[in-house]
Length: 435
Image (cartoon, rainbow, N blue to C red; front, side, top):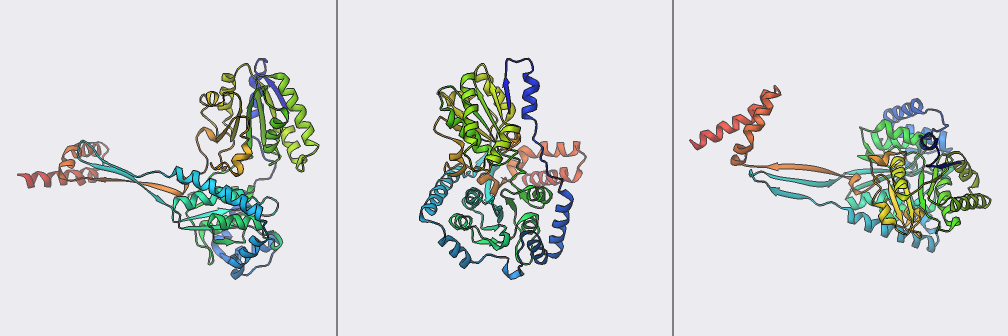
């Protein structure tokens, strides 16, 4: 864990070291992923069954790839009423927020008589990848599926690995609540290939979203262009701005809430109060003796965690923009004032009683967010990812007479004669009709 102070002479170099892109320790998987994708594209269902047997230790026939409605019923029956109610509350809030995001079409007629506009339409089909095994997150099902359904996507196909045949009941309950009825017991890069290229049992989709391991991320990268994807996500990260009026234990828990995701996750505290920072440091150590995922959280905090002492919140805001974190907490008396000075963050959480974990589950805005400084140029998942814009122009002879000559002139200057003639020939016709 790095302890930095902006007044130290070596701060710039230390800050750069802290925020340098974290490198994974896993070997490159581009070649084996390419082989899997090519095999799925060539052999379809047979490849899916072969890879499921090899990686998930489950023998399947093509007819067993799809999880039946009866299996979903049985899985949902295993979930407690309390958890089902929690999923329903989360889903309702996520749905309400994303409905508020829906864009509107527009149309207007300009001074030259051309009618211009823009129309939004949903994708025909979206694919949702859901991790299986110990990394099974029903919240991700809700966050990925609900925006697609709100956007109007007609078909949602979900792939989830079922190691040794084990279905995660809460994941299937979340899928049902989110309106997903087409679910396949396929995981890994082969699932991405199936959704991108299609097989005998799985029709191809237009965009693939959802988290996964390095193999899944690489597969999404390789099929991009054939289909759209949400992003190539890196490890989770949070920056917490907190003053000395906060409870050190609560601040420590917020830092560890990110650290427990992954050994490569990063948690950074920025504060003006060095004594408070020391209390948070001690609180982190104390919590690490109790957390069930202490080995993961401890490795993350040790290798990538940081505490930065700043002279002012203006200085803190400038550092946040350099980091461009996935998650930003502003545990201050005046969070709105400081937030107004920050341009680059995936999602922000304002106030002492609005921890980032609220956003993971029940806040409403999407928890699929840009990582690894990509918040400088990208945004979290939204209904816009499942819609596309079509612009349109309508006009008659008089409008063409006003704007056409300029278009023809530019076309000739570019050496595109047919472009110019497609306009000028119409202008000649209009002039002939008027004479």
